[in-house]
Length: 143
Image (cartoon, rainbow, N blue to C red):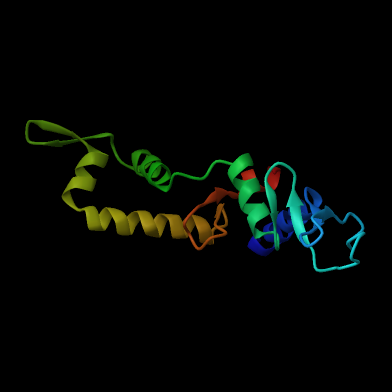
């Protein structure tokens, strides 16, 4: 699934950029520089710049068109859906999430990481940078 989305993003990056000869500093719409006939071309994105490859274009598209998933928020919503919002200890009432985080932050982090891994393995979310940023699969498909 990730490879399929990656291929579509690369195609989108090619579609929204033009070939560019940096040596002559001209667009090369036909895939060859009209001045020096070089086919060693960069990709130019109007209003952004030019660079080799498409990774930078994909990163720009993702940043402009989609919102990264806040993994903390997603995990907290999952926990709130599974446990009561308030935990009573004796006569005191605590927010369950705050209590869990404060009493065992390591366990909280491990559980969150496992939940995010599950979402990624279940192909609900996708990361293109080794887990630094995640996007919902349905958002990527609609892009």
